Length: 162
Image (cartoon, rainbow, N blue to C red; front, side):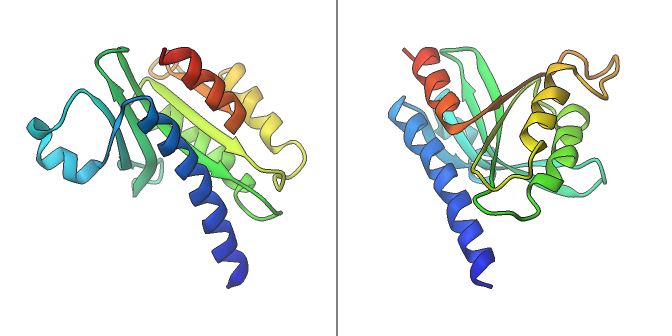
């Protein structure tokens, strides 16, 4: 039980870092379902959390964030995966990758992956799958998937939102 709690805490810290960076850059944080029911009450620079999508299994899934910006012409779904100790998150990377290319509706998707607990080769496999566009077809070939560490994310945010 303590191990699961520690994993959730570490994962939440990654999400907290994303929130801190993007709210400092001027994005308003809101739950997707709240925003969806009251869109007219919000601006055009948003960081929406708990964003739904239908998985490759036909079930309801949630992504940590959707970044929406009129100013920067962006709409990026952000998935956060943290693995501090050995566990099962790395075994879910192929499932995550297939969801990004097959069912997530956004063209731009960022996978923020960090921590030293991933199995050897897991992060390498994900980066290779994205780079070589493994398992893509004519309907999903135009997807732009970025795989970032937390440091890469900080650099991207600082360069993008000047």
